[in-house]
Image (cartoon, rainbow, N blue to C red; front, side):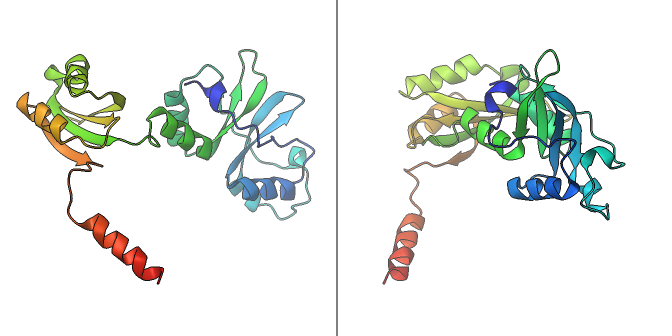
Length: 220
């Protein structure tokens, strides 16, 4: 997934002739602390809420205020990982997206990014989650996929997490079925360390029954 695919069309940029108050109102409306300033398609920079709150006269035009705009943007063909990195490193709530000629195309808000990651990792899809811990020398996703497919299942998404100063890796798998007991047994048979399992319908600790009883009580 690329930056151009997750641009928010609902949030228009600020203009140099907009007032400080309008900028603050727009940020409050969209729950953002950063907004792009654009002049006839040219990206001028990101305006930060903290800088505006320090100003006394909120009727001042953006073009007349003495604050530095952040020259931060992402190109339209950047991968979502690059967008996440930029948002995280600079603590941004939004980032501008430009084309190769540096024309403004739109912005990606932090909420857009969360929704995109949820889609990319099949968060909304029903299924079980299995977390494996392996040695980095045994990191064969092909073999892991074979084990899953042998159980008549498919991997919806996967994520690999490396530990600092360690040869161990943690692999998180989202599987397209919720009954994963047989799959867990298969992994253990192949000497994979299964650290955690989520959404396994075969694990019944009575919590669902207690929840249903509580909800029935509330509806009385």
